[in-house]
Amino acid sequence: MLSAQQTAAARNFFGRVQSGVSRLQSSVHQQLSYQLDVVSSSAAAVVAAAAAGANFPSTTQSFSGDVVVSSSGATLKSLFVTSDFMLSEVDGVSLTVASFLSARELFSLQLVNHAWRAFVATHRERLYGELLPSVFDTIVPSPSAFASFMLSYRFELMRELLHTRAIEPTFAALETYCTTTESANHGFIAMFCDIVEFTDPRVARFVAFKRHHALSVVLAATPAHVDAFRKRSGYTRPIAFVPVHNPHWPEFDLPQIHVPGFLGYANDFVRMAPGYESLRATVVKSILRDLMIFDTSAHAAAYGASIGRQPFAAVLDEAVANPALHMTFSSPLRRQLGALPIAERIRVLQERIEAVE
Image 1 (cartoon, rainbow, N blue to C red):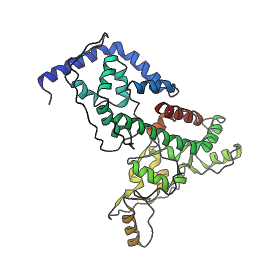
Image 2: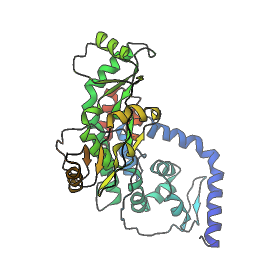
Image 3: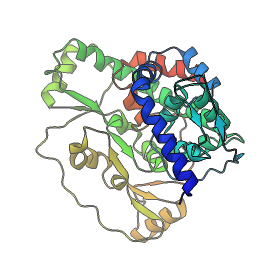
Image 4: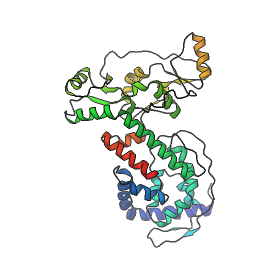
């Protein structure tokens, strides 16, 4: 509970925010649109933002993780600036409010004026430490929360760049075909890797290794659309297609299993990318089939011994058999770049990586 003094300070704080909204909203949104939403913005702008203590936008789904970051606990008592928007006498309320902001919102806060930029810079370690587990599914450790944030961001960009390069030949061929064919007639929907996400990043990683060849499967509306592509396209490499309009999707139930170490079926962890929810019960279930998820190899082996055969399973403690397999399932970062041509995606990812470095 806030004390009476803190409550009054909070009212004062939010009153000042409200009074400044009409003056600031247009300019802040304009700057954010330019710096964050336009993916072709210059790398130099990203470097400048990072140097000023600015946050990058949230781009990946999170998982629950513990990050311990020390904080100075400094409280901003009084800060007067020559701006129409003044920050004063907030007695820690502003830090409480800021701790609930996303990376994108913190970035916009710093664009308000020098006072807020200084405020975020002062509390950077605490704010970045709290953001880490909510922004990234894989956290790269570092003594500094800010450094860990930037390293984790770079890791995410590199992972997506490797994936994009892996699918580039096939995707570019499909792009060329679609741009020369009426949108209502080309019949291509998506790659399988772009319609599926997972609630647990560990499961996503090992399912991707186990069903690696399925990630590049291309979903088409009908077999006729596939035939038209094969006749008209000059692409000679093999592509696996799955027609979505299929009245004979296999129907099967996944039996309930209660054994040590069994975490569920891969399909239990699926979260569909927006717009593709209707394909979960048909396409996704048929491709993932009865793929089981075990926590350890020992538990998977014990279950296999009990049924007399090796189970069709992904095991979370297995070593990566082939680290050259770079394709991954969908992510918010990929969806953010999804409207760009494949060559432009690669360029943008490379620029962002260079900016972080």
